[in-house]
Length: 178
Image: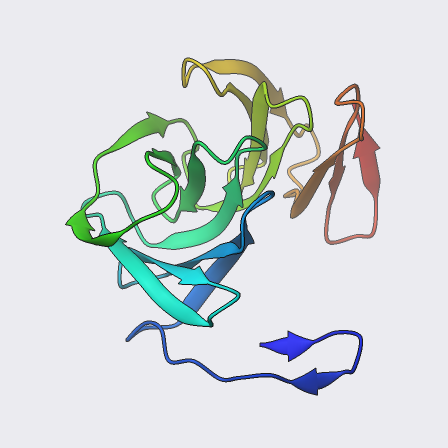
């Protein structure tokens, strides 16, 4: 944990037994979700106190590779190696519990990145299956499927501030826009 203005380390907090694969900051509260890859768990850190406030575990959905909070912080989205998108409710764990989440199956291979639209309506995922899937946050349904005709895999996603454009990058250095 680093102080970016002073460029020095604030703390080093052991959180998970396995490698941490993704971290997502809350948009409105001093919380961060730390997602463990093979451990299939989420730890919720209070970033003011630098302490873990809760944990969730999930099973049979694949190891985690990406995480993003919904703009309203009502849900945490987690992309997995099995191609699933987990929508976790509630987004802030208190205590320890077994996670009940909405699971959207879509990607045929691991999910690499997630991006949430600033208007709160959509979350986009990209994976090793050379697709981008745009999901309706309210229903969990896939709203759009974008296939890469060149077999390149998109590795990163971002929405524009007005939610009107989605950008994706690939390993060749190309940026695609929709």
